[in-house]
Image: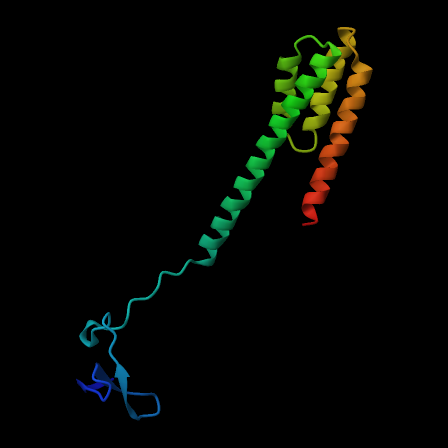
Length: 150
């Protein structure tokens, strides 16, 4: 409760309040507080739901960037490997393999089956490509496991 307004010993404008113990105490008047304007404005608080939405948005953004990087690297790896081994349509197959990498768990299996089947039927070096796909998966799993231990 505001009891009165006056000039304090500090030569600044003060207002006098009654504290919870019933004592009258002077309090420095800040420039942004006007006694007749009511309570000071509250800071905006984010609700728990808004914080969860923000964290989910951040997490999904990171996941999508990682998936795009994986798809791009897989496209590059598959295309380069198939070009070196003499596969027909190596760029198209590499792009298809990169796109299929978006499917969790089964994407790399689907792209390997597709690439190796076409390599077998076109009499390309599908055995060499099998080794490269296995090595590629080992490298990706190692990178994935090492990123979880940070």
